[in-house]
Length: 413
Ligand code: ZN
Ligand code: ZN
Image 1: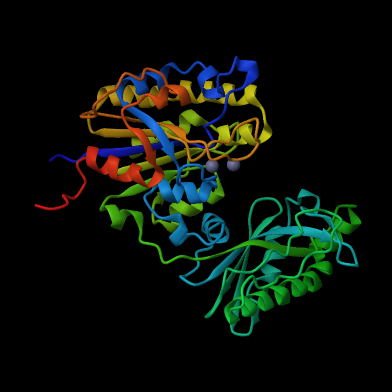
Image 2 (image 1 turned 90 degrees about the horizontal axis):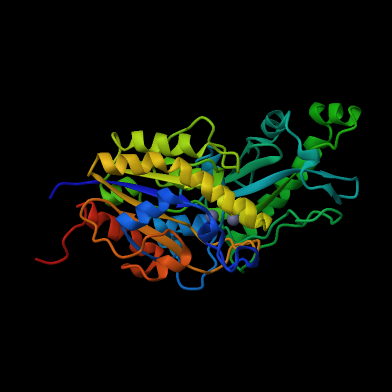
């Protein structure tokens, strides 16, 4: 059986609910999307429950599920994926946190959770904190974009079951990190975090970067506040699991981190920002060219999720129209070559009426040579309900794609 290649495009947060200003259509249904409609006509369609019916998926857990992993098994928190996305690779058992450089007053009350959205000097601040040790636990600190940073705890007997230090609101005192269960590991981890936070306050308040910020009337980045603890999982690499070479094109640190942790080759594309101004065409063009060297290429387009969180139906519709225009490169290559199995779907719904992720399923198209097409002629939530795939869970997607690409193992004789 000849093997085909797989292209998976995820329109982040693409699913939605009826919007009154669109006469009850969803933003995707209201958008003019001739290219996506053509792909829906070519292919077989269905509704996908990213993790399971009614489960409100995060982007991280949903992507793990779409890649065929059980998020309940491998996911303990966002930290390790953010860390990997920022280039901090821990080992199995290490615990990572997302952090903010923040401003606290002399009493320890957080006056600015983002230290005046600091842009310069955070690398110097991070290196002043990097390399601390406490109780045999080594601490790695790396600056991310703007006020963001990563803290990695490396050592034995750590636990991700600890609370956030970031109070998530200005005006409150920064919190003590507390163990969330009775294990000695959680207590040991919380102690290390509290030591780290106190030290960060002590070191950063007198750091030259902050003395200069004080003089310039800017909020000093005088403490680092960890949150979102998670343990680096013992995870089988994607390429090994499915015996293929995989590449990823994303613009968001979290998703890049997932791809890196799964051992995918992350391709940087100029103009790919992960924002609403991202160059969709550049990403999809890069994905199509990456199909030559890889057996599996994954693309995440983040913009629909951002419009969903903003509650902006008009913007979400417009983003789908821009994405659709960019999809002409995919439609063209599907016409030219018969060795691509394409999946277009979302990692979850982010309804503009909810302004957050919901548990509603998302439309899915699978197209390519050998696919049995159904009567669906449009890419949208309602149209997908009548499709030949019916309802799938996120973890069913990889087996479907492996089967259609001639990569599935036979079960039995
Ligand atoms: Zn998402
Ligand atoms: Zn989101």
